[in-house]
Amino acid sequence: MKSIFSKTLMLGALFFLSIGAANSQTDKGYTPFAMNADVKALADQIIDVQFSDPEKGNKLYQTLSRKIKKNNEQLIAVGDYFLDKKIISLANFCARQVYQNDATYIPGLFFGAEVAFARRDYGTAGQKYEEILNIQPENTLAMELNAFVYKNVNPHVSIEMYNKIKELNPSNYNVDKELADVYYNMNEFEDAAKFYEQYFNNVPKGKENEGAAENFVSSLHMNHNIEALSANAKKFSALFPKSPVFKRMIFFADVENYDVEAAEQSAAYLNDASYVDTVFTYLDYEYAAQYASDMKNDAALAAEYMEKAIKKDPAKIEGLSKLANYKRNNGQHDEAIATFKSYIEKKGKEAAMADTFKLALFNLYASQAAGVSAEKKAEYVKEGDQLFQLVEAAQPDNYQPTYYRAVINTTDDFSEEVRQLYENVLVKLGDDTENETVRLRADWYNVVYYINTGGENKAVLANARKYVNDMLSVDDENDSALNADKYLKNFGL
Image (tube, rainbow, N blue to C red; front, side, top):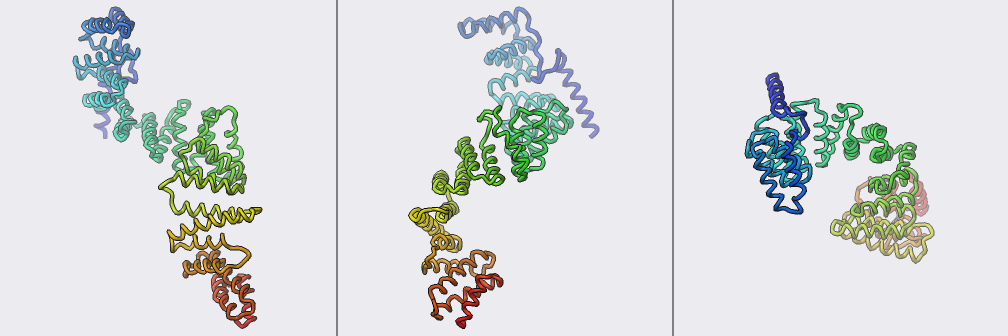
């Protein structure tokens, strides 16, 4: 460990001696000297005529090139001047000439990488930084710039480079931020949050990066680390009061924690006139809908927020499913059914039997709504029953579609067809005693059916006995079953 540390110091000193002789080190890896007066005059003439008279511009450049061809310092000075003026092709000529003069000249390699990056030639930029590192293996600036080049091209190489920098300089808190950014862009939010936390633990007060803070709380949200999310969102909201990100994350945490009083206050940002609607995202309105539904018991407001969410991002079709639920809870049954049908349609081949089953349930709820007309009820029952039958055919061992077929078809008039459905439910349940409510309802329909249709006919009434016994085996204190048991015993059954 000691020898490595000594080597680091030695190479670090060598690095600064080799390229730090000019006025001051820049984050580009080179600091261009001032251009000679005659060189500057030629460069300005080239810039003036390069578009209006390309031929003259080319001749002037040839003159300039001959004048500075062997002078690497002037080549970089002129090239950097061209680069600053967005004349990248001429800057590239200068970079190539420097490299031809001396392929090991560190400022020239840095400049060549800068030009390549400006040309969006990221492979060449990375190659130049690699060449620097072959000469100076612990040149941390080359590592940082190389890592930056690969940040969005090859993030794994970028991570490797940043980790090397971290080994050489553990106190470099900016590297933690860069690593966090890479992981964040890779959607690896657990690692992103870890490095953002390290960055904010070490960055000097007053130098905190707002974008990093926003990514940090977003990572905590994606990791569902609600306690840390709440604490950090409040801290950063005080540091960056104009950012809506921290206000939204405080609200998200309050909703997740089901803190009604806190959410009532943090939800205020949704109506903040200083924010235009473009600030808000799908998630803002999705959480607002959940808040309105679960914490304010306001299904109408929940549906309103969910509609705003869908407008923000129509591609998130799950929003249609949630909107259908809110509309159903608000008694808007036709709209709920239409919305859920749209959801299934948009899912296309991804739609499953579970979706068909849920649509059937929407019809069931609609059929049992207060004030529904007999005609409308019949429509809901018909469609719901057909949908339950589709699920029943696809999942013959599943008791649920059969059970809900029985429920949706149950009326005040007892029906053998409905009784048979309840009977089939019991057959499918077998010895399963976990679904007590379903079992008891299926048993009870059979009991009441036989008692009401049997009159005093003991042969018919006797059919009710096994269902009463089954009810008592599930719940020996069930009042309905006990009364039926007493009734049957009066007939000696």
